[in-house]
Structure formats: structure tokens, C-alpha cells
Length: 260
Ligand SMILES: NC(=O)c1ccc[n+]([C@@H]2O[C@H](COP(=O)([O-])OP(=O)(O)OC[C@H]3O[C@@H](n4cnc5c(N)ncnc54)[C@H](O)[C@@H]3O)[C@@H](O)[C@H]2O)c1
Image (cartoon, rainbow, N blue to C red; front, side):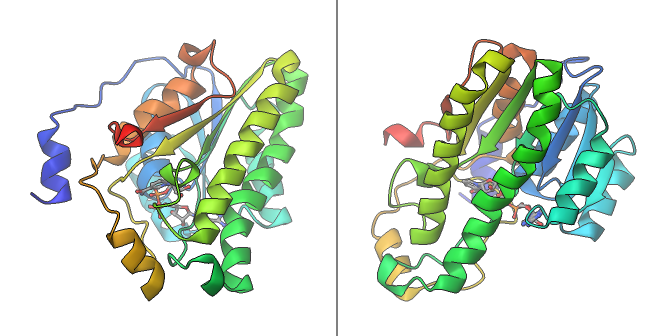
């Protein structure tokens, strides 16, 4: 069975909760593809104003063509001017931030991980996420409320999902989540992480390291594969007021893979 057939046979259908994001402004990064796109679309269909951020300008234009209410910002989250343009596009009120943009590594183990790979992956997965959150949090403090969801990975739970750079970066995302959930609890800001399992998106390594690929293959279980909309269901739950009592959590959204 192909991954697509497997996901379809799960028989899950996305159901829109009309008005769940009425009057809310949510920034979504990585919105031109995969999980970020599914999150942006779900929030827009549920009444929210979505600031859709991606470095891929033409794919962002496709999103806006399909969902004209979305506010696109073609920006690199690792660049200061990109972060400034994102916050400006959102305006004074920012209710939610979904940090979804991320990069995979080439599966290299530590002894074959070069500085360029380490920097590239950390720059987007950790530094970009921190820089944008740092720019958004003052508006949330002023409002006395806000919800941030950081997309981690199964790689934050185990060593057998990817290479050193990606695994370490997603573990750092967990640390950022827990510190921020603690720090901003008095300010009414909830901060959570979602750890997707295998999801049908555009995310692929551009090249793979032989040592790492062989190690990972030897460990590949028959893992469930999800559609991006299934991840959007978990992420929007935490972003919305339905997540009212949840902060500092790591929610594996992986069809149960984390207990395999
Ligand atoms: N697909 C999976 O199986 C899987 C599993 C675990 C975790 N994740 C995580 O889910 C998140 C989304 O991944 P996806 O699978 O939807 O991948 P994807 O490649 O389909 O989408 C990622 C998007 O992020 C954008 N992006 C990358 N760098 C950026 C930057 N510097 N500034 C702005 N945008 C940038 C890309 O252009 C792309 O549109 C990532 O954080 C990824 O690590 C994915």
C-alpha cells in the first residue's frame, strides 16, 4: 500500500469548526507547503486572519489564489528584515504564532556532520523560530494573552528519525517551548510543541549520507503516515481556545508511533 493509500484508508475527514478563529490573527510560517499550508488553510476556513509566511514566493501566491483572505508575506524567518515585515503585516494584534517552517538534514551521524549542515539546519529550525517568537511575544505580553505552537518532530523523542543536526535542532525546539511556557505563564501566553510523525509533505533530504541512511533503514518500523491536515488538527487545537488549559506540552501527533 502506498503512503497515500494508507493515509486515505485511515478514513479520517477534516471537519471545520466554524468561527473557532473569528477575530483572531495568527502568523503561520512554512505556509506555502505541507503542514504549514494545512494549518493556514484550516485557520482561514475557521474565520481567522492568517499571516502566511514562507520563503517560497510562488507557492505562497498559489495559496493566496485559492484562499484570498490569507495575508501573504514572502520572507525568510532567519533574516531580520523578514521578521520585521512579518510582524508589521500582522499589525498590533497577534493572537497566535505557529512556527512550522523547518529543514531536514541529510541523515549524517555526528562524525560526518559538517559545520555548514549544522548551521543551515539550526539557523531555520532554532534561530529563525526564536527570532520570530522574540519579535511577536511583546504584542502578546501587552495583550495579556497568546498561543504559540512550535513544530518539533519525532526526532525530539528518539535518535532514529534523522541525522544529528535535525535531531539536535528539534530537541532544542523542545527546550525553547518549555522555557517559554514557564516564563510567560503569568502573561497568559501558552507555548506548546507538536511532534509530527511521518507526514506526506514536500520535506525530503536533498542528498543522503550513506552511513546515516543505512542506520536509519535498519530501524525503520512500519510507521503510520499522516496527511498534513491531520497535523493541522493537532496544531490548531493548541492554537485555539480549546487548548486553554495546555501549556508546556509536547504533543506527539504521529498515529501512535511514539509508543512503538
Ligand atoms: N513531513 C514530515 O514527515 C515531518 C515529520 C516531523 C516533523 N516535521 C516538521 O514539520 C514542519 C513542516 O514540514 P513539512 O513536512 O510541512 O515540510 P515542507 O518542506 O513541505 O514545508 C516547509 C516549508 O517551510 C518553508 N521554509 C523553509 N525555510 C524557511 C525560511 N528560512 N523562512 C521561511 N520559510 C521557510 C519552505 O519553503 C516550505 O514551504 C517542519 O518543521 C518539519 O521539521 C515534518
